[in-house]
Image (cartoon, rainbow, N blue to C red; front, side, top):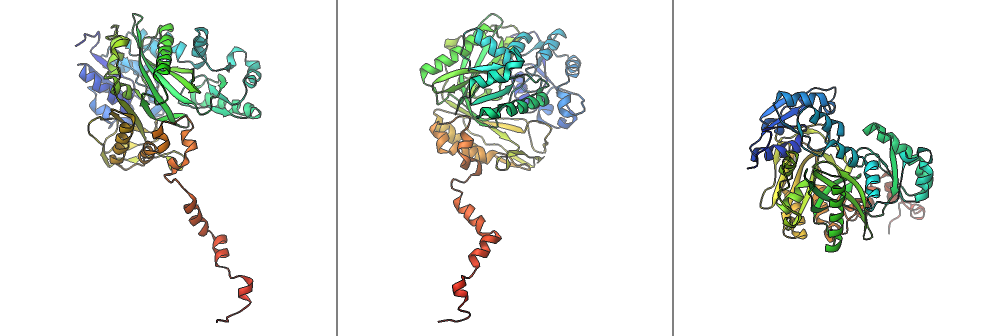
Length: 489
């Protein structure tokens, strides 16, 4: 067992990622401490942690964003390190700086790396200066008064994005340049609402783009490796719902190019710890999109194919240990798929759902992994992101993995709250998905996956026949026949 300079880690997060981190801490012989708002007092993560410390806030979300309370909780728990998980403060450079200044180890990259690579505009400028591929773009803060003109000059289609934040919030696709000004206004409003930062940029939008990301790991000795790619193209509203590795879109040459580019970008940034470099792929060309300076939700698929524990590697790197393997040592095996289980109804515009979980039975079997933060009796609210759990499978081939994932979702039993389980299963059984012809607009191009019906014509006809005008017309007697009166032959 590796000797570490701390024996207790405070988890500044909740839900399934908190449970995930606790499991690794136990395996490493470390104690876990967790913060929690009253709304989470009976959750699985709180019951599993060695120490649980209550925090307060005018909303549950505000509590988990309160840096001072988190630092105070770490002191109360006698923690030596803080793991931010993902979401919340995980990509906040000021939080990372506050953690280190308070004398704790931050299990993540240095604040300077977060500031450089976690900001879309700074990272794009950095990547471009270092000679890596970036899509044609216009950055507002370069020259705010000419932003609209420079964005128009790129030509349609365009993607207007907030510089801060992630998860697709505020993004606007512009297919007609006359709509650009309104799109900028909408994106700016969303950027202010979600991130408190109105800076924007516009880039060439790649039609039917594939979203490819590469997992990287770095240490404080300058070593950087990649753990190969993940395909994250199946999305709803710019948010991923199914991820897999390896990508069905990459041949060996393109895979090597994109993965080595990601590692080189991280190396140029002196990046330490786990991170993900994201690319847009279209027509055989790839462009840098952004870097997520944290652990990703979809990290389990990489773990399933490489056999590595990414949370453990994060802890070792944060503790100042050198990477325990070289690039040549990482040999992925088989195919892994992850499906995100959400408390929502896709058929009603992905509306969030709530309720109390009365029955919960997860699928099992060889090559099936469940990352979850919920249990029976759990109250599902709209206070946080609607993700409940992740169903991850591993098999020798993509077709086998898709079949196994679909079966696992069909076997899942969750009563008390509507979920997207059936929707995910339909995707995994869909012929287009199975062919590998997926991209960010896959769901829009295949509406039958959302509805669960491949041909709506019979249902539309039946519905039409039930409307009063159609019924009256169908039941009406033609004038010629009506003139015969009651005569019968």
